[in-house]
Each structure stands twice: as C-alpha cells, then as structure tokens.
Image (tube, rainbow, N blue to C red; front, side, top):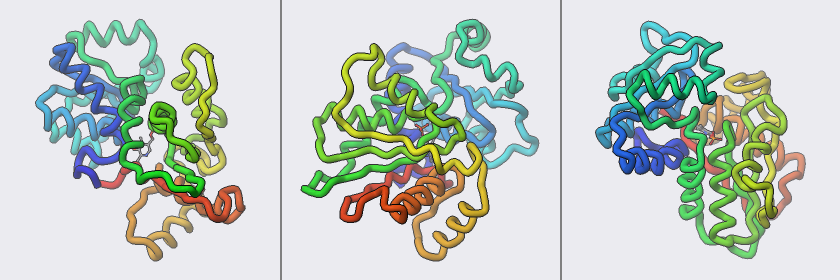
Length: 268
Ligand SMILES: *Cc1c(COP(=O)(O)O)cnc(C)c1O
C-alpha cells in the first residue's frame, strides 16, 4: 500500500540497485523473471517513473495476448524478450552474462527477484517501519521466494542491535533448506561469526511448490476472504498467513508472543 505500482517488498530490493545503476551512468537496467514476475512488474514501473530503460528477459514463452503482468510491464516501457527454459537456467553463468552485456549494450543487470547484495541492503530498511519493541517477545514473519527480503530483515535487526525479535520466514518453494542456505550466504559470506538474531525458515507450507495450491490452502484462502478485508494471493501472502495460522494452532508460536506478519505485496 506504500505505492500503487512500486509497493511491496520488490521496491525495497530495487531502490539501491536503481541508485547504483544511475551512479554507474547506465542507460538500461535488465533483469529476469517468469511470466508472472512481481519483480519485473515493479522494475518496469520504476523504470517508467525514474526514466530508465528496462529490459525483462522472460522465462519460457511470452503469451499472446500478454497476461496482465507482462501487459503492465510492456505499457511501462519494458522491453520483453522470451528466453527458452534451458537457456534461462544459465542466467547466472559468466558466459551468459557476458553475452547479455554484449547484446544489450552493457546494461545494469539485476538478478531474478532482485536477489543481490543491494537488494538485501534495501530490504533491511523495512526494519525502520516496525513499531518499537516492547517487553513482549516479537516474531516477525514473511513469505520467502529467494530469501533476499528475509536476509535483509535479519541483517537490519543485527545492524540496529534490535533485541527480543525473532524472524520466521515461510518458504513458498518446494526446496527444503534452500532459502536457509541463501540466508546464511548473505549473513555470513566468509563463514565467520553467527548473528545474535534468532531466525528460522519454515519449509512446510509450500503446497507442492512455487505457485502451486492444494485444497487446504484453497479452503484457507476462501475462508480468509470472508473473515478479513486484507487481500492476499495464493503465491506468497496466502501461504504466509496459512502457515502462520497452522503454527499458532500447533503452539509452535507461543501464546502471548507478539506476531508481526509483513504483507509483502503481490496484489494488483
Ligand atoms: C517476490 C515476493 C516475495 C519473496 O521475496 P524474496 O525476497 O524473493 O524472498 C514475497 N512476497 C511477495 C508478494 C513477492 O512478490
């Protein structure tokens, strides 16, 4: 709700990348995503607002007519290029990136999902929006796709020496351990000290994998619609709130704790 087009966690991951691209005097920012990528959508909007060219390399085929996400990106001036799935998997390799640099005249490249160091540093700023800590133990929860946002939250707490606060990430992927590994890489790049912030990634609420849905989640989403005016969607925030409810029911989240669920966006 911070902004109609930039709102959500993607803006936090983008902001410092945009600054860096400007500093490097890049004319174009290029990034990657699936056909329903919230990241490409936000990047396109930001490019339009700040007057920077954007290119989105889209995994697989580009549907014709465009789906609402790609239509929005296109209308905001993003150049959309389909990349076959096999090639797309090479997107982080040196060889592929060198080819992209050459082909698109040395653009500023942001990884899929805004998952890089500047993205994490931007996401750390979310901590500044939280209300002051009280005496009660606080648990901050958020949906995780790459783990960049949750890494930012943890490092934001560490940097600000905020105590009595735990972080709980709910993974939306069927890839046990993957997000925790990513978080560790951001927190301890040289495998040095541990942080004093307790954090955990829950891998039990993916419903079969990214953008997958099962009957339990479906039921939760329809009952949520009746009980709450807060809009949620099936890919990220639906799994967050569903997971959160299960953990409260199971007693994993203790009675009396203060729970802050971060609504990361994804509603258009
Ligand atoms: C991208 C996205 C996420 C996941 O963020 P990561 O930093 O990749 O973990 C969560 N919620 C919404 C709504 C998103 O669009």
